[in-house]
Amino acid sequence: MYEGTKVFHENYERCDMISYIIEAMTSRFRQCEVEHTNCKAVVLVSKKGKVTVNRKQVRSAEAEPESARQSLMAHNRVKRYILEEGIPVPFLIDLGVQTKEGKIVHARYDKFKQINRFLEFIEDILPTLSKEGVVHIIDFGCGKSYLTFAMYYYLHYLKGYDVEITGLDLKEDVIAHCNLLAQQYGYDKLQFLHGDIADYEGADRVDMVVTLHACDTATDYALEKAVRWNAKVILSVPCCQHEVNKQINSENLSAVLKYGIIKERMSALITDAIRADLLESQGYDTNIMEFIDMEHTPKNLLIRAVKRNGRFKWKAEHAREEVASLTQELQIEPTLQKLLFPVEEQPCKTIIKDK
Image (tube, rainbow, N blue to C red):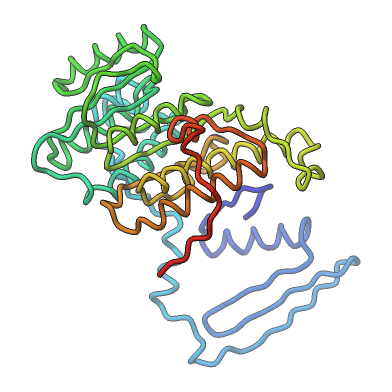
């Protein structure tokens, strides 16, 4: 069932389904298409209320097997999450996501889904992280640290990694509270620091950099530091991309840029695409994926970058030249491009061919 842009699934018992269809066909709809294991039917209702039913028998070879029918019933089954509902987790309880019995607080269910979705991204990159030695992780702009605590719990307790995680944020009271919680849980290698991303110099080696909703160019400074540290994994959910919106100017796009909201959205998407390409230019395989459903937050794009270990160097050069060409066309100077490539290092345009 569609309501606006939202899609809903629900299963009905036989009698309830019949009642639902009758109500729908007498009040809201004029056509119903039905597929059964041994027939197909189309029900039409005229403006005067006349009902016409056209049936077509389905040959046995076309009949839907029982296994397929059973799979359709899976819509209402409970989704299995990495952090399972019903199993109390201390930080989820203190952060108001779970009750003491492990039940998810209804008002925080979206947050619960977001945390699990984020852990799925981490699960995908686990082969990149070695279990030999300590895995160093920095979470820039950690805020209330739902995901920082989740990372520590998942990697250390569920997956057995020896991790050291540092969360950095500008809110002193939030940092103090998070440190207190980490001590209460016995998370000995989880710490929170007060500070600005651009000024942070507290690490020489970092295996994974996370930056979620760091505002505007703060994301760029976080990504630049990740590159300088040669981090194996970068996970970034950008936020409030204002910089390009103030700069973008293209005669070829003037027909769309004259609309403020279109210009704003295009600028945000262009900013993140350029960030992904710039990470490609630094030897990363990058993807841009949906973080969580748009209905929960419009800040729903995640940039995932995994270090290539020196392979496919032509990709890096090609990405760099693509960015140079695009920024010239749009007359923009993104912060991450300036941080990684000072003006004197900007590439000339050439054509790169894959040999």
